[in-house]
Length: 110
Image 1 (cartoon, rainbow, N blue to C red):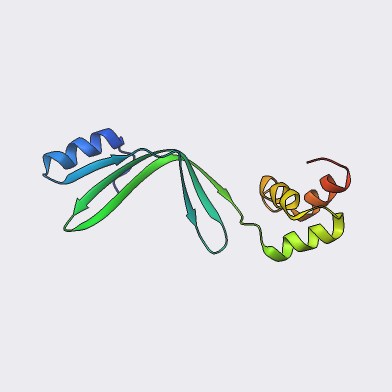
Image 2 (cartoon, rainbow, N blue to C red; image 1 turned 90 degrees about the vertical axis):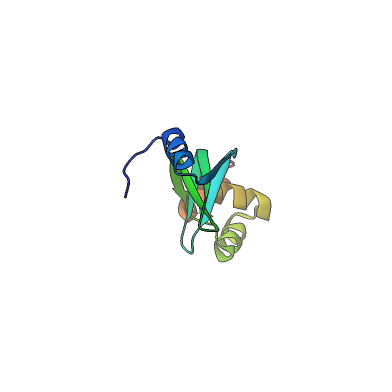
């Protein structure tokens, strides 16, 4: 809508318009969706109070991940004989690539 605007410039503009603006210091923002997660690393977060509602503007480095499903964890555990924690970590690292997880776990990689 507004294109790429520097969060610092936006904050100054909103303050000139008498909008209550604050910033939030965070390491990471995760937006959980039904089919994937959007991960925003090194976020710059600005919170503006507009007509009694808090509006968040978040910018940063964006990546996506697919959440690990319970049935996938159980299937990989069954195929490899590995424990839940190990399987879960490998599936998360491999973005839920079942075949690659089974291959790595059977070959002794973690």
